[in-house]
Amino acid sequence: MANRKYSEDHEWVEVDGDTGTIGISDYAQEQLGDVVFVELPDVGKLLDRSDEAAVVESVKAAAEVYAPVGGEVIEVNDALNGDPSLVNTDAFGDGWFAKLRLTDPAELDDLMDEATYKTYCEGLG
Amino acid sequence: MATAPETEVHKTPLYDLHVSLGARMVPFAGYAMPVQYPAGIIAEHNATRAAAGLFDVSHMGQALLCGGDPVTSFERLVPGDIAGLATGRMRYTLLLNDAGGIRDDLMVTRIEENGVPALFLVVNAACKDADFDHIATQLGGDAELQILEDRALLALQGPKAERVLGELAPECRDLVFMQGVEMTLDGAAAYVTRSGYTGEDGFEISVPNEAVEDLARRLLAHDDVAPVGLGARDSLRLEAGLCLYGHDIDETTSPIEAGLAWAVGKRRRAAADFPGAEVILDHLTDGPARKRVGILPEGRAPVREGAVIRDAGDTEIGMVTSGGFGPTVGGPVAMGYVNSASAAMGTALNIELRGRTVAATVADLPFVPANYKRAS
Image (tube, rainbow over all chains, first blue to last red; front, side, top):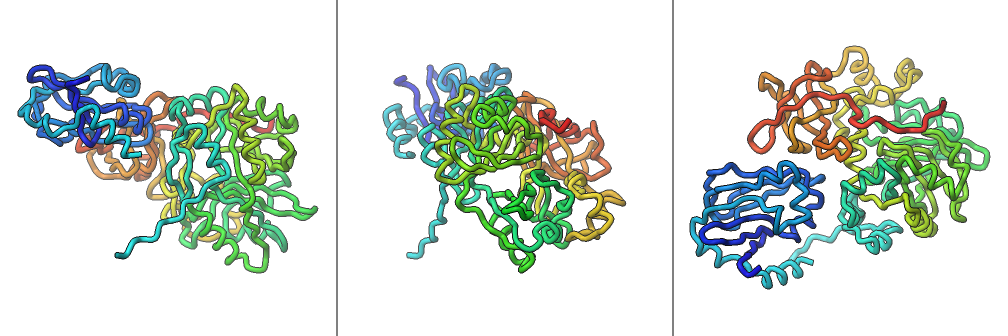
């Protein structure tokens, strides 16, 4: 996906106009293991880049998810409340977390593209 | 430039097998251990409850206490009735400190070595060096501690464990919960006990290091057996209401606070002849100030170890010591200590979670009924 960009913390953002959909990468869900709960942000919340956007609970532990870009939360993925395992089965699709109205699209330039992110993950062993 | 010395990471004899099965290896108690296999923790947990799971617990400490009078002398360190164990019977017991705190929890089986009584001990990996030092020092010339570094330990757990192991050794079917016997398994001299730490029926199998991989592969070849890592071992024992040493019990918790009064033998209570007896008997008589309880949080969010517990009036009354998601329960489950006034089943609790509170209630343990094959 050409317009999907990645943070070093393994969040992704996919941009459509001034809206960015965020989630965690396949690498991240694989590392976390079975996701059993996702605490999503409130709609209307204003997130700065790197603010805590959500918390993912796997069987073993809780992990924070940070906003890869700043923006106002305009929608969250309520389907995760019923089936948090969507994060495992479809991290880049049905397992999305939230949609943000981007504060500053220029922040996207600091994120990695697909190829760079792939290399980055490989370097993590 | 000074660099910290790298801590040596031990491998069990099954390390290569774990890696070949695609396990994610993590450091645990100085060992590289599988936390999960590709199936994942929930699938491994469910496989154990529905059929059978195979666990490598070779990191745990195994030892024989023999020579002299091992049975009587071991009672100096633990509150359990060890002298009352018949040959081939095992018991869960506790190494105590002089304040009545718990140095470790362990399994003790009375066996015979060359016709003479001996004890087979299995202790926690993280505590084993300290335990064995303590036992050897305290018992001095009264018994000889033989650490069994040449033996691995497998746990085969689940409702189909008997059927699976029975195909290799039919005599295992005759064992009842907390009983052990020597047998030959796949050509190897094994000591097999009907025990485990998942709440399920099953066996723990002590075999020579060199025989364990063949035996593990043979068991895993069975359709009913899945490899299971430490992640599911933790969720299984939590649902079974079993304590994890260093979390739910430690040097500061008494057996009575921990709800382990049943591990303090009747004869031992009367004799008051174990470490910390004064404190422990006081707790038995007057009731402890705090108690370990099961906790069922409302909603879906797990509460974790260290979370502060408050009562309905917002007063801090304790802390979560184990918490996570229970796959069989289908939601979050936890254990922790609360003031005894708030320990009754059904008591409403509030648990701190990320700056808010989660409503919870005190629940009976275990969360999932045990499925042991007890003596009829």
